[in-house]
Each structure stands twice: as C-alpha cells, then as structure tokens.
Image (tube, rainbow, N blue to C red; front, top):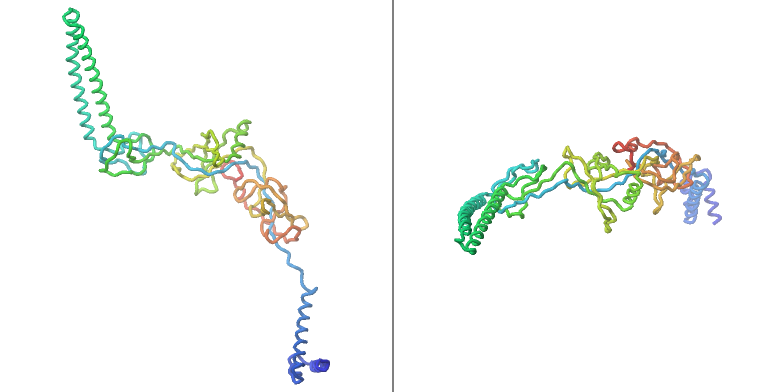
Length: 413
C-alpha cells in the first residue's frame, strides 16, 4: 500500500488531478482506488473547513414597530337586533262574500280611510232593505197597540174593562215597542255589514301585496287580504347580555347615567352607526335560556330608509370619557388564554409584555393593562422574533383612519 501511495504522490507532482489519474491508471486497480479516495478526502476536507469557523453569523430579523395611540374615548356595548314596525295590521275581510276589486298600488303608501277592497254588496243591500221594512212593520204594529192602550185606559177607568184584559193590552203594547227596537238594531247591523263590503285602511302606512285576486270568496274575520305597516318611527328589538345589564342598572341606580342614547347601523353601513334613537322599553325579566334581557329602542324614519325585518347592529354608549391605549390587532399574540405583545427595548432586543385587552374600534384594540403608551410595539414580523432576540427595526406610524370615531362621540368599538 505504501508503494501505491508513493506512486500516486510521484504521479501528482506538477500535474493536475486529471493528468495524475491518466498516468497512474497504469499502476493497477488498487492505485486507482487510492487516488479516488485521496480526491474524496480532499474534497471533504474543503467542505469541513468551510463549515468551521469561517461561516458568517446568522441574519438579524427585521421587524416593523409603531408606538401606541392614546385617545379619550367612552365605553359602549354592542349587539344585534331586528327592526319592527311601530304599528302593523293584517287587513281581513269582516263580511263573507266574493271579492269584486282592489283599489291600490301594491307596496305604496296609503292613507287612513282609503278604500282598499270591494266585496259584492248586493246580498247586504237586500238585508238592509229587509231590515228597514221590518222597522216599518214594527212601527205600524206599535201604533195600533198604542191606540188600543189609550182606549183600554178609558174603559178601565170607567170599570168597563176587566183587569186581565187591561194587563194584556199593556203587555202587547210593550212587546210591540220592543219589536221596534229589535228591527232598528237589525237595520243598523245590516247597514254596518254593507259598509264592511268596502274594506278601508285603518291607518297611514305602506301596504303590502294583495293575498287574493278578484272573484275569490273571502270569509269574514278569516281571510287575510293584505297588510299595512307604519314607517315612522321604527322599532328595533335587541337582547343585552346579563353582565352589561348589571353594569347599566348599577349606573342608573347611582344616577350617573340615564338610559343611554342608542346608535344603529344597517348591514351596508358597517362600521358606521349613523342612526340615533332612544331606549323606550326594557323587559321585566331576564331570559334564563339565553342569559339576556330584551330591550326596544325607537328610531325616527322620516326618509323611509328603515323597513321592518332588517338586521341591525345596535350600540349604546355609557360612562365617562377616559383615556385608553390603542394598538393594532395584528400586534397581539395569544398563548392559550394569555394575551401578550412584543416590545423592542433601547438595546434593540425583543421583550414579551402580557396585556389585558379591551374593546375593538376601527382596526385598533384597546389595551387596559400592560402598556404605558410610549413603547415600540412590533406590528409586523411578530412570527420571526422571540423574547431576547436582537432585531433590526423599521418604524411606522399607525393609520389616521384608525383614530376616526363614528358619530359625534368618540367610542371604543
């Protein structure tokens, strides 16, 4: 083996590896294997040297930091609800008959007293004529019995009529008078039924679609013809959780607040709450199934934007203005139930700060505890850092739109 290595060394003098291989191949297979092993060992040695102390240090992670925002805001509670009409009426037929026509534009405004539907009145006109004829008949019968009564009074006074006949005359006269009253009541009912053949609007509002076409039979107090809802004002019903109710009731008891003004936003108005209203109803008991209390608020609707059945976002503000610290939501990390943020200190090193979070408003989260407000918070690159790591810092400012408050009052959302 020593001879083979000597041959390899002699063949390598002043030659390249390729030339040495060509010259020493004549030595035999063992020499060839030794040369290949020598080359492999040299290559591995080069790599080992490169992997040693000559490797450059790891790259310092780069993060974006921003300072928190301080603002004077008020607390609020937010929930969802549905709008309902201040008044809503199902229009039903009050007499039975065949529908002749309807006189309105579906989905449009109607006034109280407008004739909406007309039911065939001929049978009710005949009933009214019959009732009026019965009155004439009863009046004639009463007039005859009144004359009999006048004669009976004179005869009874002259002792020319017995007491039994006189009492019978008095009774017949009273029955005739009662018959007149019955006939008049029957006439009034027939007249009322005749008026019911014209179905009128009981209030001002927006009318719905007709539920039945002309020519169909409608039944008294059964068939729904259409519906009318009022638009101004509009109700909104919503449920408030138990914790918020207790907080509100304590403030009311202490006299610190009255029922707070309510703000409402529609589905296409997020995140704004442009509609202003007031609470006018609080239920008398908490729903034990949901742990919520049912409330209602009233909103003016002169422009007719609101309609019953809309999904709405409800927010009511209470409490005094107080200063809060706001940071972006993306800067907050979680470890199970613990919330924390990364802060870069003066040595450009990362520190972990546990925080207690509050409400969310326009992309910023309120921090109740854990920050002073002058820290440099990592807002980008959070996933690339660990506590104690040195970082390269880039500074950014929080967007101004995050500071815009909805409505006149500044509130935390």
